[in-house]
Length: 152
Image 1 (cartoon, rainbow, N blue to C red):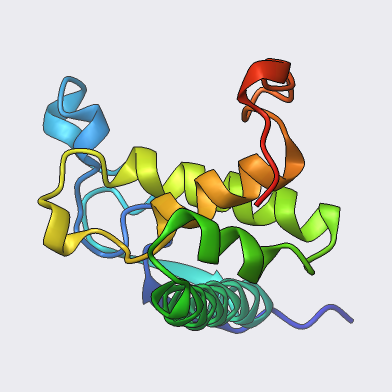
Image 2: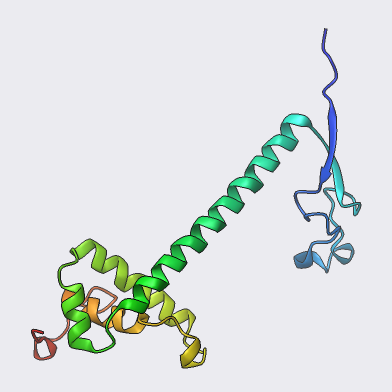
């Protein structure tokens, strides 16, 4: 004998209860078809549990990313601000970590390019250039011209 699955009313996972989807304003004024513009849907308990577990996992990932960013910013703030000292500070770091530092700091520089200087992540530009100098390469991986290479 098949028992009917218990249904649970939950916030619509497609529109997050807003009843509209902004990217689809051109189709029926953006009304969410999943919940028919009600903001809630009926799901089995298993489906509701799966959706809530995914939301909890997403929130945990955001928190972990925020912690990682805070630790990264604290490390960059401690980096010396002159080129020679920054190179000396980064020289003991392995090549893989230097590549990660350089790529991360390049992304930070691009993202913060239009921000006022005092709001930018401290040390990101210096870490990028110091790591590039130690690795002797541009972000593309092509090496510097030999005339530009120097030892700190």
